[in-house]
Amino acid sequence: MKSKDYQEILKKSKAFGKWIYITPVSGVILTKAVKNEFQINKVILISKDKLRRVRKRFGFKERLAELEKRSAHYRDFFNVADTYAIAWYSGSPEEVLAFCRKLVRNELAILTLSQLGYGKRKLGPYPTIQGEGQTKRVQEFLYETNGERTRISGQVTGNLENLALHGNWLRFQRDGFFAKLLKVLRGDIHVSKSWRESIERASILIGQGLGSNDIAQSFLWNMIALESLFHEKNERFSDEFPKRAEAFLGWVGFWRIENYAKRIIELYGKRCDFVHEGKRDHITVEDLLFTDNLVFNLINNVIQHIGLFSDKQSIIQFSKKVEAEYFLGVKPKIRPKTLSFMPKHYYDDDLKEV
Picture 1 (tube, rainbow, N blue to C red):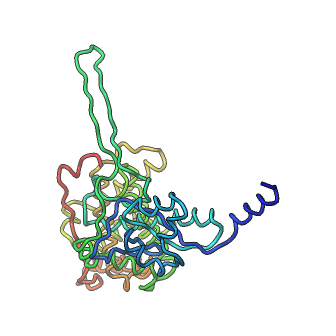
Picture 2 (picture 1 turned 90 degrees about the horizontal axis):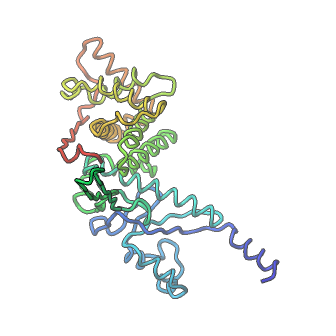
Picture 3 (picture 1 turned 135 degrees about the vertical axis):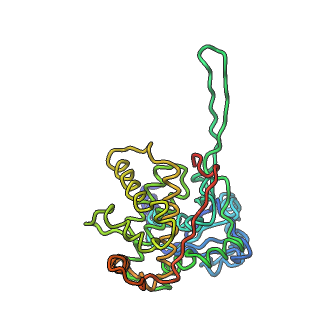
């Protein structure tokens, strides 16, 4: 090949274009309840069979069967999974791949957020781009130095279950916060741009934490998400956040009986020890599950009342008004009567290493 021809091919391969990005997804099952298709925000999940039927809607000018005739690689690609993620972006091929790969990862994390309050954390579903975060088996062998005992063991790591978008899941999400959260992220429900971006970042962090078996990391993602939604930069978290959490949940008997305010301050201390000194061993499963409870109930109440809490300042003002009512000893009027609290009850199996 002549150098000139090679340069022309290279130039063409880097040329700007409008692209449809598709990648196979594992860990999620689409059902008739969602019509075998589900839009998260900018990413659409669709079943393999439905993609073939509605490919024109997504911008394909030719049948997938025709594409498959071009190469065995294409045939394998469109049959490797039951579910595919689709997104759109403009740029060079490398720019599109980098952007869309990150986009799909983030939005699958948001979808994982739908498990909060719905399913178990331990080995629970975590949708991923196929090939990432797969379930594996770790094998270990012990040999006592005096030769008297040996032991061989194995442990499954990763996520064993699939997130099935069936009727029960759909009903739970419609009654809970997740369906409304997606409307906020898509812009169907108006909030300020900065607040929508904060909610999106927090949702990704929480979803990533739900998909991780690393206790300390999941705990940290939960704490950072809470900070991003309920905390101002120049404030002391340990002073202000317990008051804001109490504004939403202080009416619940658990708040005082189980001393939630003190526990929150203790957890923030553990968060700081982890971030600043690398101390992670003192973060327990119980700590993580407590933050799961806190995250679920706070986000559920904010999103369910998004008209009232359309930005961070409205949350701060709400907290101050509730605090003032308590200080003055007047009859509470500020809290909406529709605030809710759903305690998550855990069993011995949930409290093992996740």
